[in-house]
Amino acid sequence: MIELEGVPELIDPVMVAAFEGWNDAGDAASTAVAHLDREWKGEVFAALDAEDYYDFQVNRPTVFLDNGVRKITWPTTRLSVVRVGGDKPRDLVLVRGIEPSMRWRSFCNEILAFAHELGVEMVVILGALLGDTPHTRPVPVSGVTSDPDLARTMDLEETRYEGPTGIVGILQEACTHAGVPAVSLWAAVPHYVSQPPNPKATLALLNRLEDLIGLRIPLGELPEDARAWQVGVDQLAAEDSEVAEYVQTLEEARDTAELPEASGEAIAREFERYLRRREPGTGPGGGPGVAMEGGDTPFLRETGSGRTRPPKPEQPGPEAVPGAEAAEGAEESEESTAPEAPEGSADGSPDTDPETSADTGPETSADTDADGDSDSDADGDTDGESGT
Image (cartoon, rainbow, N blue to C red; front, side):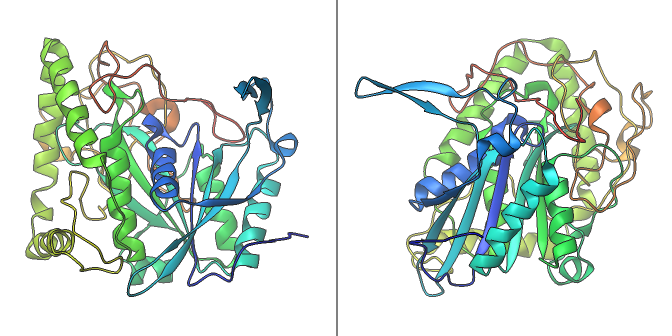
């Protein structure tokens, strides 16, 4: 039985979850939830038992010093709650952890038990994957769901992906069976610069989450970090003619694919969001407006593509979301060297095979972060059904 001591009665709660690992290219999804927790000063009220779900040889505990005393932090998943004030206050239950190594069904059932006890009305799961998308364009974010009613009312895609999946897909399917409305938001990270952090992809996820749940999210320094990240990648790409040529190919394909999206409705939606952030005291969260940066594209429809792919990168990872790939017509003249992506399914996973997705394009030789540099690679750990 779950005991929720010290947790107040929540107002219209929405659960937002993200997991490090296979579903988290560039650490974009887990960083987004960490940002929410930090900006709204979340209070941790529960943590799952690490021994039940993690292989400590895969995800090792860490030792740290606290006033000279050695302590250990165990890999786990923690739940915190934040209250968002304003004209229409609302609570968020934040779930942040590492993709479990085992007992995925029990893991999801425990998360859903918390959701039931807290009266959660909807679960939003954030993910990020590697895709054929140029870093110079807005980050494609696709919203998918297994619930046909939710797809219709929120203008989401009913996913039809078939292939390996991670804990994001498993949790969304568990929500469907439990009768809990669930949405997965996937950001596509350029496969040729997959190293974390990727503040531009994090920003894109937060912008899409903001539209979905009707809350204004304080962005802090993320817009500036996203600009600095793009400048850094621009400089790295300019130093490698092969990468620069490949980026130009992706840009042309992306621009061609998005021509139909430049409709009056899409432009009006972007303009409304811009005004909502610019005008002080407007929007559900109130407070001064913050200018928005990158990552704002409509929920995209699934498209197929034939692609020319330069030499394989070293970094494996999940592949592109519905609509994140280039349009087929833009590259018909070039010969594709990669297998076609599989059709989608109803598990909230991206629409292409993770096993083959990352075998595309050159990868920049240096790492990049919010200031243009980074020191780590994206976590490609795979457990359960996901596989690397």
